[in-house]
Length: 107
Image (cartoon, rainbow, N blue to C red):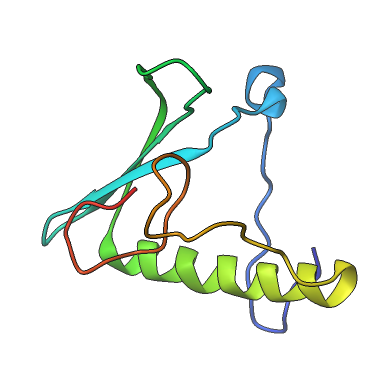
């Protein structure tokens, strides 16, 4: 990662367990005035039950910074590899990540 002038470099440790990662195709997002909570789960075809595999709690300011960082990185990805296609009508999609709505809980 290239540091911008005037920015602080951070030394990040990544343990073996976290380096394996967790697959998720479902995010449940809730918020209060003080925090955003993002629960990551996965739904599998034919299995009507899931569990939360990871929970991230962050301030609204950090949530907005994450949104901007994801937008920036998706743009860079699409510039290098082409547009990411999202198949199907997102309003009819029953599992997986969905675009945000005005409700306080989205999937």
